[in-house]
View 1 (tube, rainbow, N blue to C red):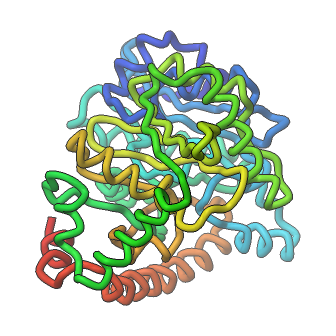
View 2: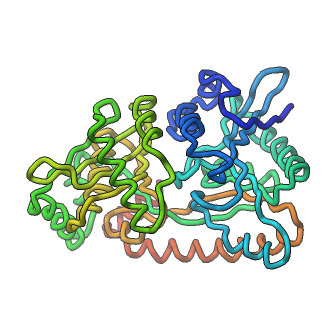
Length: 386
């Protein structure tokens, strides 16, 4: 088995990459990752140098894993700033490090794609050895596989990676017929609260539109990009992604894109949210607005997405990381997972100890937050029994 690392996704043909991925998960598609590279959203200058892992045997490619050399921790959403600080306080460099992640995208999903599922554990064990070897050769402090699927995490753990858990809030489809059917699973108090929030939208003269990728016009995209940049400007930042990336990705994978736009009474756009989706899940990604309207964020980012999931029989809505305000709107606290290997044994032992204590905290946090869910008790039990 041979493991190599490539500095540009175009070293592989699109058809071969996508055939190995063999999934409609949008963020692993060649088109998504290649667009990030071509439009310089990821580059050495941006702190995301492509370093994709390719596993081959007898001149046949068995597996791929998107990887990047990172010189900071921006855009990862699994926060390790305290680890970097501990390294520097002890005179050790934390950067560069190796990261398997979807850049700027805190959406859990597959990270390693293999052509022969039965050999996944064997491939990961070989990858683990290769990653340790390349870390010694190129002086990477560590390897991080972020927000991987739970099944993958078990295989990474069995191969020697340390596991970190965090939390997120996801909506699950309980075979709902429509939005009102979803509300019937809630207590009467919260059902009334959500109806009031939704009524405020029309009361303010705002109407909502859900637009699939193939129907997104250039006018819509230009306005949405202004929303996107305004969101970052409010934080004193510039958006990670540029307009050319958004323009191209809507053309390349329109079947994976949903744009939600809010219009005022004069037909002008006032807010929007761009989502991705596949055959199972909706992934909420980017939001912005020209001015604040009561409850418009909830309608644009959550309720419109829930409606889309119900109408298209999607099983789950992952709206992005954090945000306890999602709980009373029907989003369930769940655990998410990452795998880590630290080269320096002293720091590895200290971080492993930290991860054990952090995991206990995350479990307690999630259990406490389940009590805040707006569902009837039997519905909560059913959702967590799936």
